[in-house]
Length: 612
Image (cartoon, rainbow, N blue to C red; front, side, top):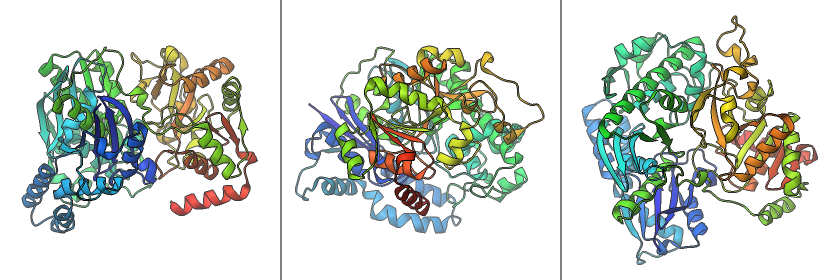
């Protein structure tokens, strides 16, 4: 039996993944354990969890695989600094000591961390240590985990070592690089520059920019094409670096960029004016058009009928939806952990299929992700022990009682924390670490945004829908189990808008029969739920459908602003206490907010706001 551990860390979203004879045993992000959002540190807790899930030690691993090649990345940094000297000298002075002390000697660092984690001395032999290239790991996570025997693979992100965009051809266990673009010409960093300009945090606020785009008019598209980016017919592009500062600066953009668009970068968390809404709409349209061109070129290079996607840009579910509708491929599959966390999975799969030359099996229908429910699960005994230790009042329900009672609470307008089974791997909550609400409610969007999630009021929520009824509500030609496709609402679900209302004002008006999940442009980021992948969430949706005639619920991640999604029952309990959530369901145990100790609620709120 061969165990392979994949690791990604030291940039953002560090994670670990464990394979047993090529099958995913466990995968999790370090942030879920450390409670530090986008934690970039060595994923010690995630590794401990993965090893515990398999019941093995570090010494029983066949190989440990890192998702990056540090010498190539160091080469890129050095060449970039030299090309921009003397500008960026301060950044160079800050970065180099870290590289020269640790990152350049990553083998030593990783071995030290593994020995420390396992309590081993310096003489103990460790497993084989392997390194993949960054985009190679992304491509492997997309293709090897997909349902397809053969597919084109596109990876789009900020930057790995040198590559920023790449096209691959996957067939069987073979994964062949066909084309790539190099730093600083990056679609991911291009989008992040606009994220920064519109007042959001780079590497975490890009999805906010995507959510803001439908409120604007894409009136800057022509200017973007004329001044900022030269796009060829095959989707390759070159950025005009005279407008960008990210290669060696502390900002993504410079004053010339701000002068071009006639306004300074928006301050963090400031309310965006129409100018910034239009900027969001413009960069979103440009990004979609470039992705479509790259897909056309990938089709020509490979002749494949299927497409796999990974890299941070693959989390742009609006572009994904358009690619599914308008692109040249019959089917597409997107790695649910498309960002750097998924690099841990890709690195491990790459070792299994290429280093160990193991064959790959695919049936064209089922992927290898197990619904991406690959994180920790907690038993009834774990939950009861916590609740009793905390002196928390609760009600234990049978399976027959649980689903109709929770469905009734949701139908009554209550907000429910739903904590079940194994935690999701990747950025989306898919029904195991979720906050749920009634999508029919015209007030639920604002309630969840302001009182529960404590975030920007414009942010849309995603619907979870029974897979067999999804097309009754959404114009969706394929299942969307990972919430990575945006689709339009069907015409008979829509309600007319007041033509006098524009921009953010429209969010307060009911736009459809499902107003809480309908974005201003009549779209939604859809999750389809099937019985085999998540039977408990499926049964709750069925119960809600039986009660209300609507098989749709709001599904948003179980966290509050500034924190990663919850991992443990204790995390869930703290989140429940600290917010205006009405009920918490831990397995079959139901907690009512009204029954909780007011002192504990006050302490939890103080703890959260102090941390924030």
